[in-house]
Image (cartoon, rainbow, N blue to C red):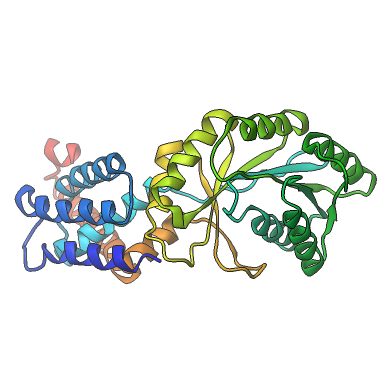
Length: 334
């Protein structure tokens, strides 16, 4: 998925090859290339600009390590800032309540129904919970059939109400049924539209108000790039969801949505999904994604080791000065 972005970022780091240290002059060209690479990957322009400004501030304020080259140092800084941009740390799903209710929202074709099945399988295997799937898309009969097929595949019951075209009452009845049958997690798959519209927003907000979910997840197709980010923003303004799920990460996508979405909607990216198999679901780890984008995990480890050694050397130097009674105010300020 990130091959093009990885190649371009690697080329940008090569600008610093052969340089003795990071300076304002030689870092400017590198940052220009990094910003261009991010925009080409469909990262929001403002996000890319803010990101490179933060990288510049970190790079120019960085201690020069003897055992690390400037290009390697820059890789580590970019990796850390990328991870921070995407949320810093993984965000867990909240499963509170009896039963815990998870509401799934998103546009038609985003992969909501498939994700609902994957999430049910993941919660059952990873969290050890009894899960009930709810077919709440009353407009697309194929969605109900699809959910039933997925439910049978993973051994999870699917609650349906043939003939009832009110998704709010279906959701409320499903929760009552879950209590009777001792299910402790209910996942409600809802209807999508081809575009954000008023009827859709009213319906999904009515379902949310009725069932009071502990977690509302917004599913977006990563292949739609920056449009995915814009759609997420519109939904969040009305629905105030808890987290984002990016699907179809195995497709021909440039990865911009994964990088931009957190800073645009200020909600964590919780899961990433690729492929049709029910086990193709992963908790989103910003640090791992940053490593994957840069394709340079070894360099990051090298710089981290060098920083640790640098700190040890500095501690030894200051200890010697203390013993010799040469420790001064400048050492204290450092």
